[in-house]
Structure formats: structure tokens, C-alpha cells
Length: 138
Length: 138
Length: 138
Length: 138
Image: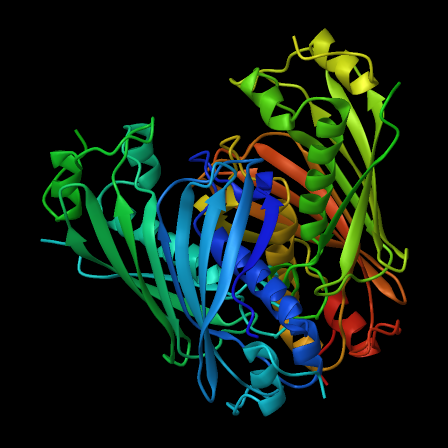
């Protein structure tokens, strides 16, 4: 059964804010990444383990739409879903919500699968199966 | 005469890289912002001066497409253009190139104009004129 | 009874690593800050609440000694202690340990108490009492 | 003739500020690093080239003392000096000044020399000579 959605919760750090008094917009890419890491773990493999096995998934596209500002010390939740598995890439979608369940941001990242020499490769079948909810680390 | 394109050059910092040995993808939003700051200055007003006059332009949308990796200590150039002026918002487009003129990333940011209380406001006419190439700080 | 030590746990984010494959040394200041935030909360007031009441505690000194590298996806624990309360300042000490309890880094931060106009002020008595373990938010 | 002091100039980026309206204190470690990179280059070798030759110099100690706040869009200058060359390590000292020559921060970093497997090694004689002002890349 595929992993439907994974929720990652944390508090906004002071260093993540900027002089406008809100979270800097570059930060959401880092929060998405934390969500993605939890998604992998929930599916059955850590992204660190993927890299150790020669499967790297750099970001080829990043999109974020900001709806409401996030503030220091707020508890935010990143909701992460895997929405596309292609032969050589993945797409994740994200929602960031605050403790009052207000939508702060939505977005997606697209990833291309490369090996340790940064050459494009097909996503290994075992990883496709794990991310689809039916596999195991070989 | 409108400002056509502004080029911002700098070297990649070590802290901007990640364990993949490349620049982390969140960093490009920060580089875009540096490009935007130079665009404002070239047009005739610093963004800092805008904020001092009660005109804030937070990011409402961020898009980055990554073509090639950027590496530590490379000289990169951010090419910034203002592609849309709406009554309450702006759109900027960016290209990031390395010293060999290889395209590393393209993207855009959309901005909404707010006052110091983060209430949406119309972009003041003086700022529209400055950004269009024909105005002065009042 | 004073708060003896507060432990903050989280996983290392990919964006926190650098091209050396380890956590960038600037990151520990941000982890210390996360530890400090939890210390305040454990004592009975969030640092956000302090700021809302006009008590800001910018860092006047930062020291970090690095013993072992931290790696992506590791679970790290920041142990935070308040070691000095002066009339206009505070000192916190920190230890960062990994899941195997290996000491990764130690350090301290010194803070000066200022108001919203960044003028030095005496730490309010209510905050001194809270941080000493015997007070309440007025 | 040894390199006496190297000055690195840049503008404060918005992302470097925090909700206090000033540059976040973790940022100075990144500025020191930019200064160090320029020091290496001025001495005759880029730090990137050092790493390519198997000489890594991770930070073993970081100290920063903050005198005045740094603000968005300010031009700051990092003055970097190499103050100690030991058999297996280096110490750099830094001063950060704004355009009005006000001292914003001082500090130092200590570095340990390791190889690509992160094993401590003696600083190669060619690097010692370059950094002392009398050597060349072998």
C-alpha cells in the first residue's frame, strides 16, 4: 500500500526569519526537504541510505506559492506526497500549515535520478517499489 | 528608458554547498534576491529605501528550474529582468550562469506590495515610474 | 527550582551539510539557538513572548569548539544550560551530541539585554525570576 | 613576503537578516569563510584547489564577538589575517567593518588539516610556503 501523505512537524527557528519579521522565502525549500526525508523514511528507506547505495535525487525544479507568512516559534507542519514516479525522476508536492491549520505555502519539487558521478540513471526497481509501498531494501 | 537587465556577479560560498558537492537548491532564491537588489539600485532606488518608505515586496511565488550544478568558488552571474508590473505586484525573471556562460538555473519570483503592517497596497506611482525607468525618489 | 538542563533533539537537514560532507560549522549557532528557545520554554516563557514584551537578547559573543563531525540525517541532541545571569546579560552553554552520545561540539553564547530600539537595558526582574526557576509571566 | 591582510567586500543580503532586523549572528562564520577564501587566493592558491589536492581545513574552533549590528544592504568589509601556522593547523583572525568603518565584529577560526578521509595530517610543506608568502603550487 503506497504511503499517502507524511506530516513533518517542527518549530520555526529564529535564523529562518528575516528583517520583514517573517520566515524568509528560501526556507520553504529546506522545509520541503525535511518533509521529503520523512516521506522516504516512512516508505521504508532513508534518503541517506539511498545515497549510500548510489542513488542521488537532486532537485531539478522547485516551485513555492506563499499564501500566508510564517512567524518565529510557530509550530508548522509540512504535508508531503509523492505525486509522480517517472523512469528517471520523481515529483513531490507539499503543503505547509501552521498550528491553526492555516495554509502557509504549497509547492512541488521535481527530482532527477543520478549516480555518484552525477550521471542520469533510471531509478532502481527496488527504490520504485519501496516508494510505491511494496518493496524492501535489497 | 527602462532598465533592461542587471547582472550581479559573485563567487559561490562554501556554506552554500551541500553534501552532494553542489550548491544547495534553496540558495538560488537568495541569489535571485541579490540580483533583485541590484536591479532596484540600477533603477535608481535601493530596496532598503523602498522599505524605509513603507513599501515592502514579499515573495508570493518562487520558481526555479535547475539545468546544471553550481560548485564551490565558481564565479556566477545572476541576470535579472523585471518582466511585469501590475497594480499590486511585480514579476522578476532570472538566469544564473557560470564563468563559462553555462546556464545553471532560470526562474522567476512574483511579489505582492504590502505596507509595514503587511496589508496589501497599490504600488506607489513614484516606484512604478522608477522601476519603469522614468522616475525619481519623491 | 532552576531549570538544570534542557535537551533539544532533531535530525540533521541536508541543507545544513556542505561539500565536505559534514554539517557546516555556521550551523551550530542555529542549533544552539534552537536549544535556547527550548530552555526558555521549559523555564516558563517562550523567547517570542519575551520579545513581545520588549525584552530582546541578541548574541554578543559566540564560541564553538568542534570535536567530531555531524552528518546528514543523524539525530543530534543539544544540551542547553544557563550558566550566568548578569544584570544586563546572560550566558548559555551547550553540548551537541549524536545518537551514539559522541560529543560533536561544545560552546557558549553571551547575550546582552536590549529593548525594541536596541538600547541596552537591565533584564526585568520577572524574567530573571522565571529563568532562575521561581517566577511567572507578569 | 607574507600576505598581511586581505579585505573582502560585499553587501548584506536580505536572507542574512533576522526578525530582530539585523544580520543573524550565525552569518558571520560564513562571512569569515568568504574572507578566508580570498586570503587563500591572494596568497596564490584557491581553497578549492587545496581540496582538489587532498588538503581539507575544517573549522575546529569558531569565536565571534559582536560589537555593533549589521543591517540589510550595508556594505561590509571582512579583514582577514593568518595569525598562526602550526604543523597540523592554522588560525585566522577577522574584523568585520561597515562602510563608515565601524567595527561590527571580531573573531577567529582555528582549522585542523585533514585528508579526504578526514584523517588528521601535517600541512604539506608547499601549502605552508604558499601561505607564508614564498611558495608555489607544486
